[in-house]
Length: 412
Image 1 (spheres, rainbow, N blue to C red):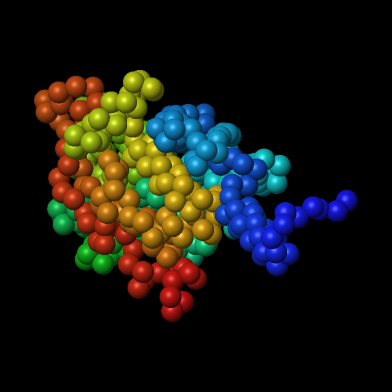
Image 2 (cartoon, rainbow, N blue to C red):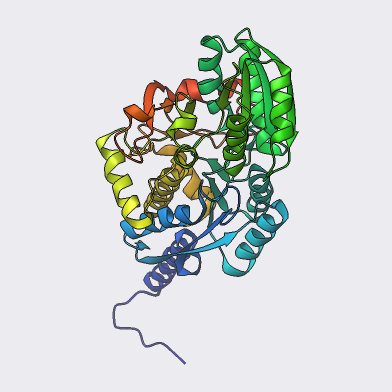
C-alpha cells in the first residue's frame, strides 16, 4: 500500500515528523506508569503480636491517603493489596517476590518485624522496586542493611535510645538490665541503648533474651530483679512489652525500688495497661495525636474510620504514602529510581513531619518527641495519655551520617 502525499509535503518533513512522534511515544512509555496503574503492596503483622502497631489500621491509613489523593495519579488508577507476614521473614519475602513477579507491585509499604523488613528489602532491591518501611525499628535497616531501594520513615532504635536512654540516665538511672526480644529489632535496640548508657557514664549489668510472642515473663522478670539494676530496659514491643509490664507489676518491680524503661512503647500499649500501671513512664515517639491542631484534625478523621487513635506508625504510613504519590505525580512515572530521587529532593511538610527529609542512606529524619505517661488525675479522656516533655530535633534524633556504615553514604 502506497501513501498519497499532499502536494507540497516534503518527504524529509515526514521522516522528521515520524522520528519525532516515535521519540515522544518512546519517552512517554519510559516515563509512564507500568501497566497503567500505580500498585502498592501493604505487608505487616495483621493478627499477631505486632498487629496493633500497624496491622489492619495501617492499611486503613494507606487507603485514606489514596482516597485523599483522589484515587488516581495523572489519570492512572492507584490500587493496593495487603498480606499478613505473620512476623516470619520467609513468608514476607516470598509474598513480596510473588507480588512483584505476578502483580507488578511498584511500592511495598508497612512492615513491622525488622527481620521481615531486612528479608523483604533484599527482594525489593533485587527486583528494582521500592519499599517504604514505617513499622520496623531496627536502625540497621539504614545502617549495615541499607539498600538504594528503601526508605525508613517513622522511627528507629537509635532515635528511641537517644531519646529515652539519655533522659533516664540523666535522672540517675545509671545501671541497666535488659529484657530483650531475641531477633534483629531487640538486638539493635539493646545495642543502641547500651551505647547511650555507657556513653553517658552508666553501666549495663546484664540482660536476658526472650523469644518473640512470649506468654510467660516470670523467669525473665525474676532475673531482672536479681540483677540489682536501677533500670530494667524493655527492648521489645507490642504484646511482649504489655506482658512484660504486667508481670513486672505482679512481681512488684517498681515497688521494690527498680524502674522500668519502655524503649518502644505505643499509645495502645499504655491504653491497654491503664494509667495506674504506666504513669510516669517516659518514652520517645515520632507522633502524638494531641500535639497540634493538625495532628488532632487528622487523628479525628482516623478515629472516625477505625474507632481508635493512631500510633506514630499509622500516621507515618499515611504521610509516606502521600509523599510517594506526590513524587509519582511530579515525575510522571512509577519507576523506583526516579520516584525515590524525587522523594529525596523534596521535603516532607504535613501533620506528621515539618521539614522532614530523606537522606542518602534512606533514613527519613524528622523531629522526635520525649513524652511522659500522665497520671490518672492529669488525664481528661480515654486517649489523653501523654504529655510532651520536649522536642528532639531531627539532626539530634537520628544517627549522624558520619557514623553510618551504609554503603550508600559518600566516602564509604
